[in-house]
Amino acid sequence: MDLIKEIFRGNPRAVGRAISLVENDGVGARPLMKGIFAGRKDALVLGITGTPGSGKSTLADKLIGQFRRKNKKIGVVAVDPSSPFTGGAVLGDRIRMMGHSTDPGVFIRSMATRGHLGGLAKSTGDAIAILEAAGYDIVLVETVGVGQDEVEVVKLAEFILVVLTPATGDEIQAFKAGIMEIADLFVLNKSDLPAAEKLEVELRAVLDLGLKDQPRPPVVKTSAIEGKGIEHLVREIQNVVSARSSSDRELRRRKLLSWMLRDIAREKMFDWLSRKVPKSEFERYIDKIANRKIDPYSAADEIIARLKKP
Amino acid sequence: MDLIKEIFRGNPRAVGRAISLVENDGVGARPLMKGIFAGRKDALVLGITGTPGSGKSTLADKLIGQFRRKNKKIGVVAVDPSSPFTGGAVLGDRIRMMGHSTDPGVFIRSMATRGHLGGLAKSTGDAIAILEAAGYDIVLVETVGVGQDEVEVVKLAEFILVVLTPATGDEIQAFKAGIMEIADLFVLNKSDLPAAEKLEVELRAVLDLGLKDQPRPPVVKTSAIEGKGIEHLVREIQNVVSARSSSDRELRRRKLLSWMLRDIAREKMFDWLSRKVPKSEFERYIDKIANRKIDPYSAADEIIARLKKP
Image 1 (cartoon, helix red, strand yellow):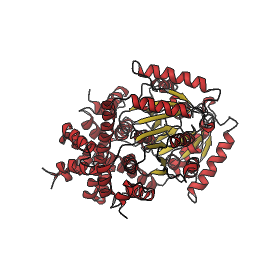
Image 2 (cartoon, rainbow over the protein chains, first blue to last red):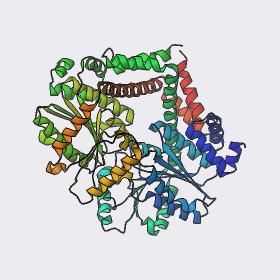
Image 3 (cartoon, chains in turn purple, brown):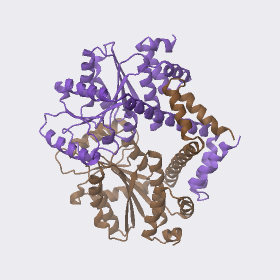
Image 4 (cartoon, rainbow over the protein chains, first blue to last red):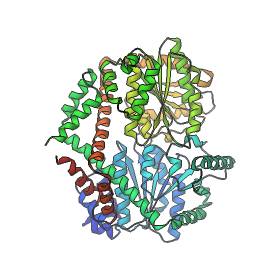
């Protein structure tokens, strides 16, 4: 089948195949993504992040339900660390969203983190573009944890929800640098628990301290498992998004594209180096560094110098 | 003063200045690191990682005390995310180690994560080499969280302790891909809490599942705040390290150097690109991508192609 044409028609099997292709960085991925980027529409891309156990998947599930009632088509990219240890637990998370798996208006796909950050941002960015091309109105990007790499991936979204909960003893301290700064909205999930109030007070104090004169992002209380607060949450998301000026949206989109372009360039350059300098050459430099014949900086310079020659 | 000479003499002020230099990537950093790598001795580099609240800092503090009783000189590199939000809390953590701040046999230094991962691994690696050159017998690398970037940094250590605790509702699920695999030893801290036994059973089950026929890393129970289990922990660390064959240690060191070399090369190449391609050129490509005139992959190719021309 003509993959690009089928994607623009919204064929979910074509979407799945295309995402596999970019994930494996197969030969067909490159012309595919050219075609996708050329004709892509813009969806509302929502990022959801928060500590494991904060109920992100349940929340995502309820958000999907709410958006479906508004007749929106939804694509979900769940960013998973792939590990023999965590595989099972994470799968359990995914299953929570599976209530929607037979709904043709919902497409759910996991992306595994393999190796390093660069590749994941690239393939998640591609997956978002594919879902946009296929006509999904909303793309949810959900991360499993709150590591720096996941923060980077969630930055691909134009609107970021950070989920906190008193249930797992979430302390503000537990939030890594960068996670508080990027939130467009905070969700206090499992807000029926007694410690919720304390967490909210703490969160607001920390926001006052950190954001000083900047506007504060909204804080919305939910109890995802009971479906409480979800309508309100969707309303708040729409309020914030529609209050943005077109120049603000343009700026966000450029920042995102700039980040994606730099990331791709960085990877491509390193690929170039790896192709041009044989592994045995690298090994020889490691020997020299191990034997204190050269420092790693000078070694890197010498290796790169080989690229500068024709 | 002659910084390199003073470092080899073990002057802590020289060590502090040198680390600032590599952290800020100042002009003097390059010749400095050449000198350091040329004459460096090897310390035992221990990495400590675990979720915030697991008591890592208290544990590090007690480990320092135990090693000091054996007359070992200790350097500590605490890897901190720098954020206006978490700054205060993390500072509190550091203060727990400050009991040793007046001990000339102990050197404690925080490294902030700024920008992205690459830079942090590089500067942490440099800091370790500086401490080794200054004659510290043991270098502790402690991370604040368990994000992917911190996992990467802790890989600079030849022996990695992963700290778990029942206190913060640590679930095995909370551990990111990569963290379980890299542990040379697990510490179950706050092991006097009732849920400790359940966590240990869970951990051992998960290790059996994930490691199959490989040998299991030891699991040591501590209560750092009461100083319980620390002697046993130090003994276990020494057992594992001394059981390693010299070829195994050699292999570990090469892997580490290889990783560091690739990381430095990657950064240097991107610096080269940033110098050679003006910002306005990048902006023009962003325009073209935003207007669907080009896809990001082709744009990256065109930008890199400029480097290939003389």
